[in-house]
Image (cartoon, rainbow, N blue to C red; front, side, top):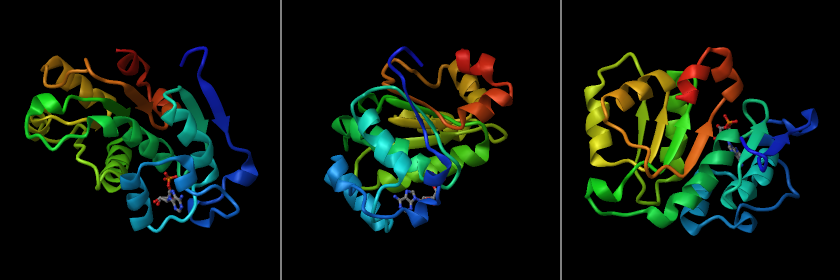
Length: 199
Ligand code: AMP
């Protein structure tokens, strides 16, 4: 976070479930999302962006830092995933060459379950774009993860500990990273991940 980081904290009355997001509200189209992302949103049956999405999407699309606070179920994941994908879309490539798919976005999550959930959202919303993603977490064989990273993945969703194992093994490089997301940052810090995150 730096001096230009914008903070968004939704008041209690705005923290309704995403499924009950109500109009009148701007449409996803009015937020300026790419056709490929609008299609994915439509495929998912979303009609209107939720309050956190309305606030966060334009800020992230403009490349600014943002810290968002809203309860679970308010659509936070799509709130950062959609504009992140929009920013990476210019790098989308169908080339099989790993060199064309360096890591561009890193999403850190406190638990394997959350990492898997966020990764599923990335897969869902990026389905009409040739962007590649991988989910990295501990407690399983590291070798298939290394193989995936070697093929090239623009988006890495990871828990901090296993990601550092990959750093040590030099199976991942952050030279081209442009976007960093700390999902459930408060929980990650509570769980004692501060040293790992700093590293
Ligand atoms: P989250 O708060 O990110 O865990 O999202 C909660 C749920 O809301 C997920 O099942 C999403 O698929 C769904 N969701 C996200 N954005 C919207 C939206 N704009 N309209 C309806 N449902 C949504």
